[in-house]
Length: 441
Image (cartoon, rainbow, N blue to C red):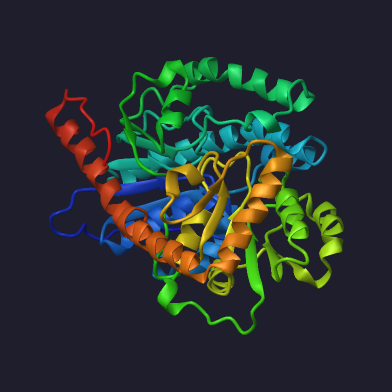
């Protein structure tokens, strides 16, 4: 077994349960942002439900997990950084971000998967694992090495298969051509690395992702389960929201500062509202475009604040003080921040593209069509203005959003859904031959 592996405690499974789950992921972190939080949530909520569960991840999250998991940290196993990990990370600084993700990032991930597979296979035997679950990476194209482990494997929920809206595409750019070539190899790669085709179940977040699965893996059982969820204990509802100290409207953005998030369009929308609405923009997050965005926002003066990355608890506090969260992203497969704002009773305005379409309805949020960048700025400013001028509309959206999250996106509800999938797979194993999976749970 790899060095740096913690010793796992081995207690008896709760009465009436037979799932012993190993969560395998490259990262499990609330600090990393994006998909990295998913394995952490699965592990924590399964343990809270009383199930025997273990977590196998990269050691770069060891310090955080040691702080947040309490006694359950004894159930975490690690692989250490390798020479290839370090080399890919250093080289990625000299390559455009999206190309680096599809090339050097993919190489590093696949290398880690190989090493995770080796340890996972040992743990299945040592711990009596009955289900192996690989929640990330969420890309439907990236292959998986998780097969032949001695226990059924669940992969996902995956989320992807989308591109920029027509008015935002970079047709003919070196970056887009390179990505198109790399995507075209997905079918071959998934034949050579057959984890997904051999999985007991592939989970997809939506029909878009189902359609994006490579042909070589579509023979595997596929079920639909939303990718993201919310811990409702951290993000509280509208009744507990902070009372504004001034009439100034606080607009918040939470996310990475990268090109496809289009924070520049949000800044432009706020600039267009000067003299009409008393709006202050709070930008929470960091990334390669921070300096460029700060320069663009100088015309807003003290009406914009760049907070950098904040702990999740601080993000929840900021949302409770905000008039609205705005997500202008033009390539958002998921968008967990939308659900977090909905849970916080913070009205949401988002581009009507990708993930937000899965979460928001007309009753609980505002979706702005991404026609052209110029028109989007105009309509985004109008949506902000309507919420600022109509507290009644804002309250209506906030109440409906919280209710929708409680019904469909609470992590406790999601844990029950994944347990149904685990139980179905184990029953199939016992019956030896049935391949029927629930299409939706």
